[in-house]
Amino acid sequence: MPKDPPQNGGSGEPEYRVYRAASGSGGGVGTRSRSAGQRGADSGSGGPGGRDSGSGGPGGRAPQYRTYRSSPRSLLARLRGESDADVGRRHEHLVPDRQRKRERSLRRGWTWRRVLKYLVLAVVAWIALSFVLFMISAQDHAGNLPKGAENALSSGGPILTSANTVLVVGLDNRPTTGAGSKEGGLQSYDRSERYAHTDTLMLWRIGGGVSKRLSIPRDTVVNVPGHGQEKINAAWSQGGPALTIKTVEALTGVSINHIVVIDLANFPKFIDDIGGVTVKTPRICSSISGGKKQGGFTLNLRPGEHHLTGLQAMVLARTRENSCNPAYNDLNREEMQQQILNGIKSQLFSFHAFIHLPWASWDAPGVVQTDMGGLSLMQLFIASEIGGSAPVHILKPVGPDVGPWGDGLQPPANARQIVKRLLGS
Image (cartoon, rainbow, N blue to C red; front, side):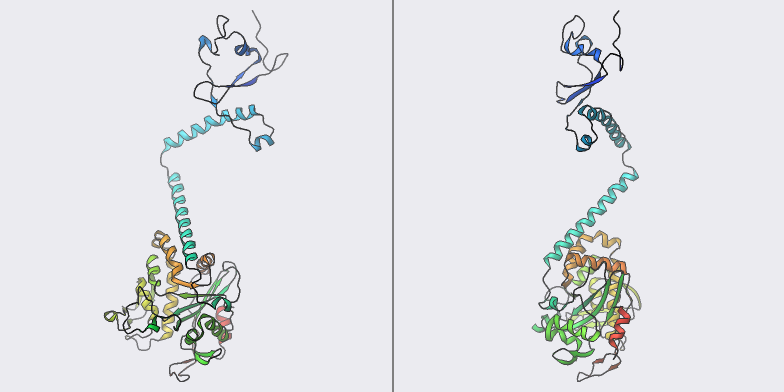
């Protein structure tokens, strides 16, 4: 009786792995472990009867082995010094494990982990879509700021990491479309931005974890460079944004890094996109440009907290005369404007705002004219959230009836010291 060939050691040859071409549709490389004593199956008699049948199994049946698609060794495998046989051996163990894991995953169906995973992916995709729309819209609206503004600004650092001073301006010109476009009694110059006056002037110290705002009453009488004593709101009509920037800097001693001009035509739409704003008001009885019946606006509110639509928020921001309270004046209006800004900031992370985030992202750049590009605007929104709700500060006048206007307001003599204390700039 012949002896069995030695296995692994002695004078026999060690086991080795044979890679041979597989027949049929597998098209891959076949592998199986064979010892030195079994090599006759490939070159000698293939089976009973001493005849090479071309098949490695008993009775002429095809050998039972797995087939794998051949692939070159990876760089990592080469660095590890693995041969093709080593890679095939490792792959032989990995594929069944992966298949079993896939089968187990299919049997499990929808688990809370899988639901959470896809929910997170959906949220990330929704935010990414909104970011792309915001950047495209910002690029589309770039360059809409009147000429001369950027040359008057001082350079500042990244808004996320360093505090910048932003001048927020609201003009009194009436839009040609949308809300306010059908007010009665308007002349052509009433719709012109070139001849507009600044209804709103606000300094916003924002960035690096800071968020502070200071409103300057529109009737404050100041020295407008090159024009003498004027109400500060006249600087725009006399020299556009550049002269307005220089006038505010001369009054406050603050260098302005960016400017944002609010577009009243698009303001209500953006407010509606985010789901409105919540503000606390006194009794309001407002009728602008003859009221709603004459193409203007009417707003009546009881004292307390209100959730306002975009149109209501715009009317409140413009209200200077309140028939329910004759003492209501421009200082009260500026307080309401700052509350509206705080309301916008609070609403940005609401569920309604998230559901409508792509629409709000698309409309947001159209609400403003600014020197800032898409990335800087995005930093501004993020910095406002990090900085929290800014307290309401107003550069209050010390006396009325200055100059020939009769309704001019005298600024405090130490205006620069007050501004530095309130803004910390």
